[in-house]
Figure 1 (tube, helix red, strand yellow):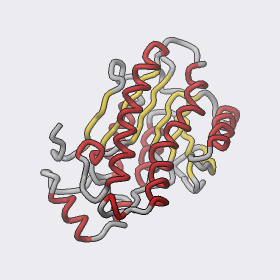
Figure 2 (cartoon, helix red, strand yellow):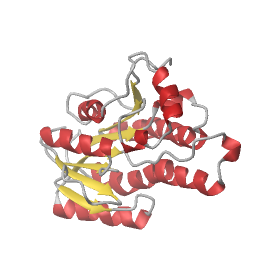
Figure 3 (tube, rainbow, N blue to C red):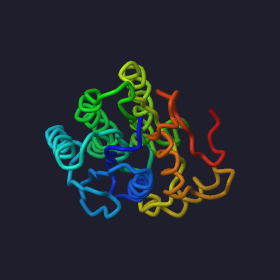
Length: 239
């Protein structure tokens, strides 16, 4: 895969998304942000898109191609934290919202974009990176809906990796620990201290560190990894 073409980043107006957009632009990709907010100055094109709306995603894919060009990379990054507490105390509304934004939207985004990528010329048609979480693998207490939805993203990555291998589209997931963003700032000080204590390196990640891994997974240098899960844990991961 060449560095030319378009990279879509969902949830691109958030801290991680902005860092990814800026880093992919450095690699020569034309960057397109899909988010409820279109205020992402790091993107070459920012579209206001509800990633839980399949019709809106279909329109955004067509508009992206019309205005920016051939889609070569897709970073599925949109997500929300959801309730912090025991599973049995989470409201049905909150549970459904977390799954809609974090998991169902990933299926709908893939459905809207991948057919266009499969139509690309050449044997190497693109890259898909899915933003999961270390909590998906760990099953962190008090984060049931979030952890379960993010675990679903790992399964989606493995399925897509197998389904798209013959098409020359590589699909991989990233599982960061806590990243220093607005989402991290929204948790309580007690919760923050608990999560920090789990990380041997003794600090949370910076968005730019996530972006570096995503950039490699979107690059021609990533040529034989698909259906894989890449940890960014600061030593926290145990499997």
